[in-house]
Image (cartoon, each protein chain N blue to C red):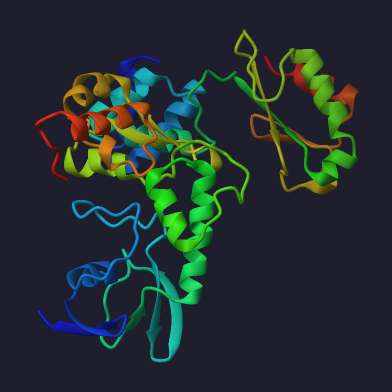
Amino acid sequence: MDNATIDQIIDKHHGEASSLIQILLEIQGQNHWLPKEALERISERLEVPFTRIQHIATFYKAFSLVPKGRHEVHICMGTACHVRGAQRVLETVEDLTGIKPGETDLDLKYSLEIVNCLGCCALGPVMEIDGTVHGNMTPATTRDALKKYE
Amino acid sequence: MDEILLTIDGKEVAANEGMTILEAAQKIGIYIPTLCHHELLEPYGACRLCMVEIENRGRIQYVASCLYPVENNLVVRTRSEKVDKIRKMILELLLAHAPDSRDLKELAEEYGADRNRFDREASFCVHCGLCVRYCAEVKQKFAVGFVDRGTRREISFVPKIAAEECWKCKECFPLCPTEALQAAYVYVQDITAKSPFKLVL
């Protein structure tokens, strides 16, 4: 992500320090992670101390300071999904992508994450990819769902 | 400005509006233990060691005296059975993080806190925020800050700023109640032992 894009996002929010989280969210949304250079640029432009930005960026789980894949795969490991076989769904995804929860593959295609409940237990086991919920997953349907994402 | 009259440990105190209980107590020489308090900094209320018992219209509450503003007719007790119990518990929890802190050990002796009560989780930082706040509020350099949250929260220097500012400042080192940084320890030793320059804080 280059400085021009970052500046554009900052200008959209009129360079106000109070819009810090909005700006971070937007960069996170476009870039999938927050590079240190981007944070430094924001710190300079908004006149917010770098420590504060660092504090906020590490506080919220929505932000990532390490590169994330284009597609964020969340697998629910809540009680309902767990007893309905979320472990097998997770194993399938791990096999297909070659990454463990919390990791990102080398092509920056997928990031895998375990969550504890997505709030739709009746659909369990649930897998969420880029915000789209896939319910009643089996290893076979998991494979099909993952293939749709490039 | 109106004077506010309150009682601390049986002594009448006249305080100004906006003062905290801790300030009022310090004014008449009553000692309340604190870790995260510093006169130059905004009250923070992180360590909770300054917990006191207050009685207002018959209601008893336990509040952090470094944050609680004085009120008329307030009755404050800085030591009571329950206050001591609360402080003992806080000390034991803090000692799990910084078992060798001199400040904590001294207080632990006074309150009978057992430093082995909880499993050690020695991070050597009790998150008092003194270094972070001192750097931000007094020095305005923002060289050190908190990162992460919850049990993983820790202090972290920004290397770029630290490289420029910290060598000549180091004023946060003696503030640390746990001597978290080895460097802080060496520095404090140094200024107390041989250096003709005494740091006044």
